[in-house]
Amino acid sequence: MSAFKTKLNDTSLFRKLYIVDLFCCVLSFIQVPAYVFLVFLFVWGLRLVYINQKRYGTFFKMRFGLWIGAFLVFSLLSILINFSYTVLFSLVMFLHVMICFFLFYGMHTEPDFNFKEELYSLSVFFVYVTTVLNIIGIFSLLFGINYSWEFFNVYKICFPIFENRLTGLYYNPNLLGFVSVAAIFCCHILAKSGLYRDIGKSPFPKLMLAVCIITNVFSLILCDSNAAFVLGMGYALTYLVYIFFDRREGISPSIVFIRVITLLIAGTILVTSALMFRTIFKAGFAAITAKTNSMVEALWKEDEIIREIEEDAPKDNGVTFNHENKNIDSGRFRLWKESLDLFKISPIIGIANGNIVFYSEEYLNGTLSYSYHNSDLHNGYLTIIVSTGVIGGLLFGTFAFRFVKHAAQHLFLRRKTVRDEVYPCLFSFLCSYMVYSLFERALLYDISFMVMFFWLVMGYTSCYVAKYEHLIETQYLFRRRRIKRTLL
Image (cartoon, rainbow, N blue to C red; front, side):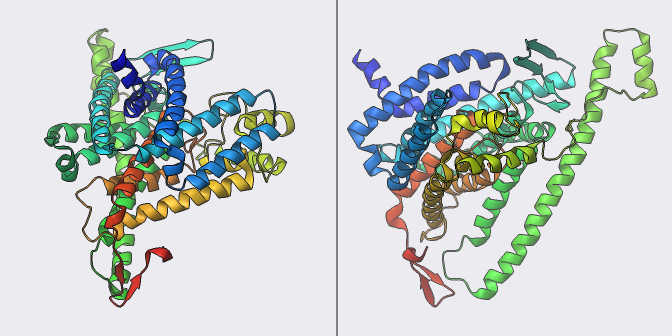
């Protein structure tokens, strides 16, 4: 009984199970039981919020906790002022936000917690699992294995193609795209030698990392998720910026100018090449898929199928891996326009997150509705501002700015380079995710794998900041003047 109680009080174990279960929630065939189990994990998380505050004093030790506390107070005030029949949903989101802040971001308040061991174990899990799932999805695509099932227009499974795009074993292509970028990020983490030096483990097999990267790049391209592609390119560009400016001694204005120009050229070449490769690869793989599917059909059908292959007759129902919806914004502009009208209803204190759809249908154009595609503003920043108003937006923005400022110091104000450590990967992912949140429901008000993965990375970054704060040094600026930390 004592061992079981110890496990119940283990916050690290909770984080692992919570993030793994949320990952299972994006998989088609086990999504429903994963959501059922999520209810018990959510209650467990709320219990740990209380216990950690009692034993660790989480709020009082949390970095920038003052801004977090003020944001939570105004969020609760917004819920009470905008009381409606959706108040239960608003309260659930409020409790979800507490788990994000206190158990994920607040992991740096836990004494003697080795965050790198937890990071390593989760990275290994995602590398193995995503590789296997991708191989199954791509293999099924090539050999014409498919399955489709719909339950009263409420729950739908399309494997491995959904709306002309690869979805594999995931619920929709956009989720596959995000998971693919997250898995590549985990591969980069496991490629860092500093990680193994700190946890005392042998390096992860490079062959497995290579297979994982290849299969996830394939999946990222074939799912044709523009937002996920932006996330991946943002990660690569942010890391490239770090590499260009990772300099331990002072730099002159001429060196800065040359590096900025070189960086702009390199970034342009990288983005252009990636876009070209993406287009060519989709077209090539579509042709390969058409051929392999025809060959599989030829094994089971009569001679007319063979004649079609020999004549190279094109098929009208081939998969092209392109959006069926040619509207580049996928309806987001309408949602964002509606959000401005929602903001006008209560610009100071907000309307509470649970009222976003309700107010849209009750007082405005009804662009938002209780459906999968139109139940959110698809912009994390707009969702926060509409939910908590100008005050809540400023409080959250202040917290975010303070965190980013301190996190950036650890890249450029350390006397020794951190290039062989995991920290540049964490920082790059956070930066790219902030851009990604402009297009997805992916910053705070959503109990999903995307949101919690972001806060998990936030937590690991906060642990790094708290642990190595004393190693930050004053740096020379242009070899004469110094940058003081107070100015940053």
